[in-house]
Length: 411
Ligand SMILES: [Zn+2]
Ligand SMILES: [Zn+2]
Image (tube, rainbow, N blue to C red; front, side):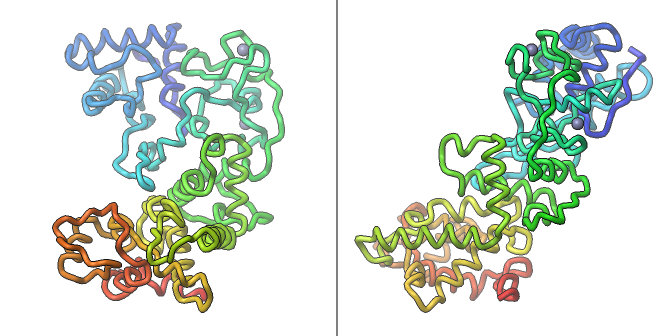
Protein backbone atom coordinates (compact mmCIF):
# COMPACT_ATOMS: atom_id res chain seq x y z
CA UNK A 1 0.00 0.00 0.00
CA UNK A 2 1.91 2.98 -1.25
CA UNK A 3 -0.71 5.70 -1.37
CA UNK A 4 -1.58 7.61 1.74
CA UNK A 5 -3.61 10.68 2.57
CA UNK A 6 -1.81 13.62 4.12
CA UNK A 7 -2.61 13.70 7.83
CA UNK A 8 -4.05 16.86 9.30
CA UNK A 9 -2.91 17.99 12.70
CA UNK A 10 -6.10 17.67 14.68
CA UNK A 11 -7.57 14.82 12.65
CA UNK A 12 -9.01 11.86 14.54
CA UNK A 13 -7.24 8.56 13.88
CA UNK A 14 -10.51 6.95 12.81
CA UNK A 15 -11.13 9.72 10.29
CA UNK A 16 -7.66 9.22 8.83
CA UNK A 17 -8.27 5.48 8.52
CA UNK A 18 -11.51 6.04 6.64
CA UNK A 19 -9.71 8.37 4.21
CA UNK A 20 -7.00 5.76 3.77
CA UNK A 21 -9.63 3.10 3.05
CA UNK A 22 -11.41 5.44 0.59
CA UNK A 23 -8.18 5.90 -1.31
CA UNK A 24 -8.05 2.18 -2.06
CA UNK A 25 -11.77 1.79 -2.63
CA UNK A 26 -12.09 -0.28 0.57
CA UNK A 27 -14.67 0.05 3.27
CA UNK A 28 -13.16 0.68 6.68
CA UNK A 29 -14.00 -2.92 7.55
CA UNK A 30 -12.04 -4.19 4.55
CA UNK A 31 -9.11 -1.99 5.53
CA UNK A 32 -9.02 -3.55 9.00
CA UNK A 33 -9.08 -7.01 7.35
CA UNK A 34 -6.14 -5.95 5.19
CA UNK A 35 -4.30 -4.87 8.36
CA UNK A 36 -4.88 -8.32 9.83
CA UNK A 37 -3.31 -9.94 6.77
CA UNK A 38 -0.24 -7.68 6.98
CA UNK A 39 0.17 -8.41 10.70
CA UNK A 40 -0.36 -12.15 10.25
CA UNK A 41 2.58 -12.21 7.87
CA UNK A 42 4.69 -10.42 10.46
CA UNK A 43 3.66 -12.11 13.69
CA UNK A 44 0.39 -13.88 14.46
CA UNK A 45 0.53 -12.80 18.07
CA UNK A 46 0.28 -9.19 16.96
CA UNK A 47 -2.67 -9.83 14.70
CA UNK A 48 -4.63 -11.00 17.75
CA UNK A 49 -4.08 -7.62 19.42
CA UNK A 50 -5.84 -5.75 16.63
CA UNK A 51 -9.64 -5.51 16.97
CA UNK A 52 -11.98 -6.52 14.18
CA UNK A 53 -13.52 -3.07 13.74
CA UNK A 54 -12.57 0.56 13.42
CA UNK A 55 -14.60 1.54 16.47
CA UNK A 56 -12.13 -0.14 18.80
CA UNK A 57 -8.93 0.47 16.88
CA UNK A 58 -7.61 3.36 18.94
CA UNK A 59 -4.98 2.46 21.51
CA UNK A 60 -6.97 3.54 24.57
CA UNK A 61 -9.63 0.92 23.78
CA UNK A 62 -7.14 -1.91 24.39
CA UNK A 63 -7.63 -3.19 27.91
CA UNK A 64 -4.82 -5.43 29.06
CA UNK A 65 -2.80 -5.44 25.89
CA UNK A 66 -2.33 -1.79 25.07
CA UNK A 67 1.44 -2.16 24.66
CA UNK A 68 0.75 -4.96 22.16
CA UNK A 69 -1.65 -2.65 20.39
CA UNK A 70 1.06 0.00 20.18
CA UNK A 71 3.42 -2.59 18.71
CA UNK A 72 0.78 -3.62 16.20
CA UNK A 73 0.22 -0.08 15.00
CA UNK A 74 3.97 0.54 14.91
CA UNK A 75 4.37 -2.44 12.60
CA UNK A 76 1.50 -1.27 10.39
CA UNK A 77 2.88 2.25 10.30
CA UNK A 78 6.20 0.90 9.05
CA UNK A 79 5.07 -1.92 6.80
CA UNK A 80 2.71 0.05 4.71
CA UNK A 81 4.98 1.29 1.98
CA UNK A 82 7.25 4.26 1.78
CA UNK A 83 7.20 6.67 4.69
CA UNK A 84 5.44 5.89 7.88
CA UNK A 85 1.74 6.25 8.42
CA UNK A 86 1.08 8.94 11.04
CA UNK A 87 -0.80 6.44 13.20
CA UNK A 88 1.14 6.98 16.40
CA UNK A 89 0.82 10.75 16.14
CA UNK A 90 -2.95 10.65 15.72
CA UNK A 91 -3.69 7.89 18.25
CA UNK A 92 -5.30 8.40 21.64
CA UNK A 93 -3.53 6.67 24.54
CA UNK A 94 -4.31 6.00 28.17
CA UNK A 95 -2.83 8.50 30.59
CA UNK A 96 -1.68 8.11 34.19
CA UNK A 97 -3.09 11.48 35.14
CA UNK A 98 -6.18 11.35 37.30
CA UNK A 99 -8.57 14.21 37.82
CA UNK A 100 -10.48 14.71 41.08
CA UNK A 101 -11.23 11.63 43.08
CA UNK A 102 -11.51 9.04 40.34
CA UNK A 103 -11.59 10.44 36.84
CA UNK A 104 -9.17 8.72 34.50
CA UNK A 105 -7.81 10.53 31.51
CA UNK A 106 -6.61 9.93 27.99
CA UNK A 107 -3.52 11.28 26.32
CA UNK A 108 -3.75 12.91 22.90
CA UNK A 109 -1.15 15.14 21.27
CA UNK A 110 0.34 16.35 24.53
CA UNK A 111 -2.96 16.77 26.37
CA UNK A 112 -4.36 14.84 29.35
CA UNK A 113 -8.08 14.79 28.62
CA UNK A 114 -10.55 13.47 31.20
CA UNK A 115 -12.22 10.38 29.79
CA UNK A 116 -15.51 11.82 30.97
CA UNK A 117 -15.23 14.32 28.10
CA UNK A 118 -14.97 11.77 25.32
CA UNK A 119 -18.22 11.11 23.49
CA UNK A 120 -19.33 7.53 23.11
CA UNK A 121 -22.59 7.47 21.21
CA UNK A 122 -22.54 10.38 18.87
CA UNK A 123 -19.91 12.41 17.05
CA UNK A 124 -21.44 15.64 15.79
CA UNK A 125 -20.36 17.69 12.78
CA UNK A 126 -20.29 21.27 11.51
CA UNK A 127 -22.19 21.35 8.18
CA UNK A 128 -20.41 24.54 7.08
CA UNK A 129 -16.97 22.96 7.44
CA UNK A 130 -18.15 20.29 4.99
CA UNK A 131 -19.46 22.89 2.56
CA UNK A 132 -16.03 24.51 2.48
CA UNK A 133 -13.80 21.51 2.42
CA UNK A 134 -13.24 19.44 -0.71
CA UNK A 135 -11.63 16.63 1.24
CA UNK A 136 -13.59 16.36 4.46
CA UNK A 137 -12.12 15.02 7.69
CA UNK A 138 -13.21 14.78 11.30
CA UNK A 139 -11.19 16.70 13.90
CA UNK A 140 -10.63 14.83 17.13
CA UNK A 141 -12.06 17.83 18.99
CA UNK A 142 -15.54 16.90 17.77
CA UNK A 143 -15.18 13.73 19.83
CA UNK A 144 -15.26 15.86 22.98
CA UNK A 145 -18.42 16.86 24.84
CA UNK A 146 -16.90 20.28 25.57
CA UNK A 147 -16.86 21.18 21.90
CA UNK A 148 -20.47 21.85 20.97
CA UNK A 149 -19.96 24.60 18.41
CA UNK A 150 -17.70 25.27 15.45
CA UNK A 151 -15.32 28.05 16.43
CA UNK A 152 -14.74 28.91 12.78
CA UNK A 153 -18.35 29.18 11.64
CA UNK A 154 -20.06 30.02 14.92
CA UNK A 155 -22.73 27.37 14.46
CA UNK A 156 -23.84 24.49 16.64
CA UNK A 157 -22.44 21.07 15.87
CA UNK A 158 -25.20 18.80 14.61
CA UNK A 159 -25.74 15.62 16.60
CA UNK A 160 -28.75 14.14 14.84
CA UNK A 161 -29.55 13.64 11.18
CA UNK A 162 -32.40 16.06 10.35
CA UNK A 163 -33.91 13.51 7.92
CA UNK A 164 -33.81 10.15 9.69
CA UNK A 165 -33.14 11.43 13.24
CA UNK A 166 -30.30 8.94 13.77
CA UNK A 167 -27.42 10.04 16.01
CA UNK A 168 -24.49 10.91 13.77
CA UNK A 169 -21.43 8.75 14.24
CA UNK A 170 -19.01 8.54 11.34
CA UNK A 171 -16.94 5.80 12.99
CA UNK A 172 -19.88 3.43 13.06
CA UNK A 173 -20.94 4.20 9.49
CA UNK A 174 -17.41 4.58 8.07
CA UNK A 175 -18.69 7.54 6.09
CA UNK A 176 -17.11 10.99 6.04
CA UNK A 177 -19.69 12.57 3.75
CA UNK A 178 -23.01 12.09 5.44
CA UNK A 179 -25.51 10.04 7.40
CA UNK A 180 -26.17 6.41 6.49
CA UNK A 181 -29.59 7.45 5.11
CA UNK A 182 -27.81 9.41 2.38
CA UNK A 183 -28.28 12.93 3.78
CA UNK A 184 -25.00 14.76 3.27
CA UNK A 185 -23.43 16.67 6.14
CA UNK A 186 -22.99 19.72 3.94
CA UNK A 187 -26.71 20.00 3.28
CA UNK A 188 -27.73 19.81 6.92
CA UNK A 189 -29.12 23.13 8.24
CA UNK A 190 -26.74 25.18 10.40
CA UNK A 191 -27.94 26.94 13.53
CA UNK A 192 -26.17 29.82 15.28
CA UNK A 193 -24.51 28.72 18.54
CA UNK A 194 -24.57 30.66 21.83
CA UNK A 195 -21.43 32.77 22.10
CA UNK A 196 -20.05 31.19 25.28
CA UNK A 197 -20.08 27.79 23.57
CA UNK A 198 -18.16 29.19 20.61
CA UNK A 199 -15.58 30.68 22.96
CA UNK A 200 -15.26 27.45 24.87
CA UNK A 201 -14.76 25.45 21.68
CA UNK A 202 -12.01 27.87 20.63
CA UNK A 203 -10.39 27.68 24.05
CA UNK A 204 -10.40 23.86 24.06
CA UNK A 205 -8.87 23.90 20.58
CA UNK A 206 -6.19 26.22 21.95
CA UNK A 207 -7.10 28.94 19.52
CA UNK A 208 -6.72 32.56 20.44
CA UNK A 209 -9.91 33.65 22.18
CA UNK A 210 -10.93 37.27 21.96
CA UNK A 211 -13.42 37.24 24.77
CA UNK A 212 -13.29 40.90 25.71
CA UNK A 213 -16.95 40.97 26.62
CA UNK A 214 -16.53 37.95 28.81
CA UNK A 215 -15.20 38.40 32.28
CA UNK A 216 -14.96 34.72 32.97
CA UNK A 217 -12.26 32.75 34.72
CA UNK A 218 -12.45 29.85 32.28
CA UNK A 219 -11.39 32.06 29.40
CA UNK A 220 -8.54 33.59 31.35
CA UNK A 221 -6.82 30.33 32.31
CA UNK A 222 -3.47 29.84 30.67
CA UNK A 223 -3.24 26.08 30.98
CA UNK A 224 -5.86 24.04 29.14
CA UNK A 225 -5.59 21.34 31.82
CA UNK A 226 -6.84 23.78 34.44
CA UNK A 227 -9.86 24.38 32.19
CA UNK A 228 -10.48 20.63 31.95
CA UNK A 229 -10.15 20.34 35.73
CA UNK A 230 -12.49 23.19 36.57
CA UNK A 231 -15.28 22.08 34.26
CA UNK A 232 -14.99 18.56 35.64
CA UNK A 233 -15.18 19.96 39.17
CA UNK A 234 -18.37 21.83 38.25
CA UNK A 235 -20.01 18.66 36.93
CA UNK A 236 -18.95 16.54 39.88
CA UNK A 237 -19.51 19.02 42.71
CA UNK A 238 -21.77 21.91 41.76
CA UNK A 239 -24.20 20.36 39.26
CA UNK A 240 -27.01 18.46 40.88
CA UNK A 241 -27.17 14.77 40.30
CA UNK A 242 -29.05 13.22 37.39
CA UNK A 243 -29.48 14.93 34.05
CA UNK A 244 -27.65 18.06 35.24
CA UNK A 245 -24.50 15.98 35.27
CA UNK A 246 -24.61 15.03 31.62
CA UNK A 247 -23.39 17.25 28.82
CA UNK A 248 -25.94 19.34 26.98
CA UNK A 249 -25.79 22.91 25.68
CA UNK A 250 -27.81 23.98 28.72
CA UNK A 251 -25.67 22.33 31.39
CA UNK A 252 -22.48 23.59 29.77
CA UNK A 253 -23.88 27.13 29.61
CA UNK A 254 -24.76 26.83 33.32
CA UNK A 255 -21.21 25.73 33.98
CA UNK A 256 -19.68 28.65 32.09
CA UNK A 257 -22.05 31.06 33.84
CA UNK A 258 -20.93 29.74 37.24
CA UNK A 259 -17.41 30.98 36.49
CA UNK A 260 -18.66 34.39 35.31
CA UNK A 261 -18.66 35.61 38.87
CA UNK A 262 -15.69 33.92 40.37
CA UNK A 263 -15.06 33.47 43.21
CA UNK A 264 -18.31 35.04 44.46
CA UNK A 265 -20.44 32.16 43.14
CA UNK A 266 -18.29 29.63 44.96
CA UNK A 267 -18.44 31.61 48.20
CA UNK A 268 -22.22 31.90 47.92
CA UNK A 269 -22.56 28.17 47.31
CA UNK A 270 -20.40 27.25 50.32
CA UNK A 271 -22.04 29.85 52.54
CA UNK A 272 -25.46 28.40 51.75
CA UNK A 273 -24.22 24.99 52.79
CA UNK A 274 -22.96 26.31 56.14
CA UNK A 275 -26.18 28.22 56.76
CA UNK A 276 -28.24 25.12 55.98
CA UNK A 277 -26.09 23.16 58.41
CA UNK A 278 -26.62 25.82 61.10
CA UNK A 279 -30.38 25.73 60.60
CA UNK A 280 -30.56 21.95 60.51
CA UNK A 281 -28.02 21.31 63.25
CA UNK A 282 -29.53 19.38 66.08
CA UNK A 283 -26.10 19.01 67.57
CA UNK A 284 -22.98 21.06 67.95
CA UNK A 285 -20.55 21.52 65.10
CA UNK A 286 -17.93 19.74 67.18
CA UNK A 287 -20.02 16.62 66.61
CA UNK A 288 -20.76 17.28 62.93
CA UNK A 289 -18.71 15.92 60.09
CA UNK A 290 -17.28 18.28 57.48
CA UNK A 291 -18.67 15.93 54.89
CA UNK A 292 -22.26 16.27 56.08
CA UNK A 293 -21.93 20.04 55.49
CA UNK A 294 -19.89 20.20 52.29
CA UNK A 295 -20.18 16.70 50.84
CA UNK A 296 -17.05 15.66 48.93
CA UNK A 297 -15.73 19.22 48.56
CA UNK A 298 -12.09 18.44 49.35
CA UNK A 299 -11.89 15.30 47.20
CA UNK A 300 -13.62 16.90 44.23
CA UNK A 301 -11.31 19.93 44.43
CA UNK A 302 -7.99 18.13 44.45
CA UNK A 303 -6.12 17.03 41.35
CA UNK A 304 -7.64 19.48 38.86
CA UNK A 305 -5.23 18.09 37.75
CA UNK A 306 -2.76 19.86 40.05
CA UNK A 307 -2.79 19.52 43.83
CA UNK A 308 -0.92 22.71 44.57
CA UNK A 309 -2.73 25.95 45.35
CA UNK A 310 -0.72 28.01 42.89
CA UNK A 311 -2.04 26.09 39.89
CA UNK A 312 -5.41 24.82 41.09
CA UNK A 313 -7.75 27.85 41.17
CA UNK A 314 -10.60 25.85 42.73
CA UNK A 315 -8.57 24.42 45.59
CA UNK A 316 -7.02 27.83 46.21
CA UNK A 317 -10.46 29.43 46.51
CA UNK A 318 -11.71 26.61 48.77
CA UNK A 319 -8.75 27.21 51.10
CA UNK A 320 -9.35 30.96 50.95
CA UNK A 321 -12.98 30.57 51.90
CA UNK A 322 -12.42 28.05 54.69
CA UNK A 323 -9.63 30.24 56.09
CA UNK A 324 -11.95 33.27 56.05
CA UNK A 325 -14.73 31.35 57.77
CA UNK A 326 -12.53 29.80 60.42
CA UNK A 327 -11.26 33.23 61.38
CA UNK A 328 -14.52 35.13 60.95
CA UNK A 329 -16.07 36.85 63.98
CA UNK A 330 -19.54 35.53 63.24
CA UNK A 331 -21.32 32.19 63.31
CA UNK A 332 -19.56 30.98 60.14
CA UNK A 333 -16.50 30.39 62.32
CA UNK A 334 -18.39 27.43 63.83
CA UNK A 335 -17.28 25.29 60.91
CA UNK A 336 -13.77 25.37 62.37
CA UNK A 337 -15.08 22.78 64.85
CA UNK A 338 -16.54 20.43 62.23
CA UNK A 339 -14.72 17.15 61.85
CA UNK A 340 -12.60 15.92 58.95
CA UNK A 341 -12.00 12.26 58.33
CA UNK A 342 -8.53 10.85 57.72
CA UNK A 343 -8.81 11.06 53.94
CA UNK A 344 -9.84 14.70 54.10
CA UNK A 345 -6.92 15.46 56.41
CA UNK A 346 -4.65 13.83 53.84
CA UNK A 347 -6.13 16.04 51.13
CA UNK A 348 -5.76 19.18 53.21
CA UNK A 349 -2.14 18.39 54.05
CA UNK A 350 -1.47 17.07 50.53
CA UNK A 351 -0.20 13.79 51.88
CA UNK A 352 -1.60 10.23 52.16
CA UNK A 353 -3.61 8.42 54.82
CA UNK A 354 -0.57 6.44 55.98
CA UNK A 355 1.18 9.63 56.97
CA UNK A 356 -2.01 10.79 58.67
CA UNK A 357 -1.93 7.58 60.72
CA UNK A 358 1.71 8.25 61.59
CA UNK A 359 0.99 11.85 62.64
CA UNK A 360 -1.84 10.58 64.77
CA UNK A 361 0.38 7.99 66.34
CA UNK A 362 2.99 10.62 67.17
CA UNK A 363 0.34 12.83 68.75
CA UNK A 364 0.81 15.58 66.17
CA UNK A 365 -2.81 15.67 64.98
CA UNK A 366 -5.41 17.05 67.39
CA UNK A 367 -8.49 14.81 67.62
CA UNK A 368 -11.99 15.43 68.92
CA UNK A 369 -11.87 12.40 71.16
CA UNK A 370 -9.07 10.20 72.35
CA UNK A 371 -8.72 6.88 70.58
CA UNK A 372 -8.46 3.85 72.80
CA UNK A 373 -6.00 2.28 70.45
CA UNK A 374 -4.40 4.34 67.70
CA UNK A 375 -3.49 1.21 65.74
CA UNK A 376 -7.20 0.81 65.08
CA UNK A 377 -7.30 4.12 63.20
CA UNK A 378 -9.99 4.13 60.54
CA UNK A 379 -9.54 6.98 58.02
CA UNK A 380 -13.27 7.02 57.28
CA UNK A 381 -14.22 8.24 60.73
CA UNK A 382 -14.59 12.02 61.23
CA UNK A 383 -12.25 12.79 64.06
CA UNK A 384 -10.16 15.83 63.28
CA UNK A 385 -11.42 19.39 63.91
CA UNK A 386 -11.01 21.52 60.79
CA UNK A 387 -9.41 24.50 62.51
CA UNK A 388 -6.77 22.47 64.35
CA UNK A 389 -5.95 20.51 61.20
CA UNK A 390 -5.68 23.77 59.28
CA UNK A 391 -3.16 24.93 61.87
CA UNK A 392 -1.19 21.72 61.40
CA UNK A 393 -1.05 22.59 57.69
CA UNK A 394 0.16 26.12 58.50
CA UNK A 395 2.71 24.86 60.98
CA UNK A 396 4.42 22.24 58.89
CA UNK A 397 2.84 21.40 55.56
CA UNK A 398 3.00 24.55 53.50
CA UNK A 399 5.26 24.50 50.49
CA UNK A 400 6.56 26.87 47.88
CA UNK A 401 3.56 26.18 45.62
CA UNK A 402 0.95 25.65 48.32
CA UNK A 403 0.97 28.23 51.07
CA UNK A 404 -1.22 30.77 52.75
CA UNK A 405 0.54 33.66 51.08
CA UNK A 406 -0.73 32.51 47.67
CA UNK A 407 -4.24 33.49 48.57
CA UNK A 408 -3.64 35.95 51.43
CA UNK A 409 -1.79 38.34 49.14
CA UNK A 410 -5.06 39.17 47.43
CA UNK A 411 -7.00 40.16 50.56
ZN1 LIG B 1 -17.39 24.78 10.81
ZN1 LIG C 1 -29.99 10.22 8.22
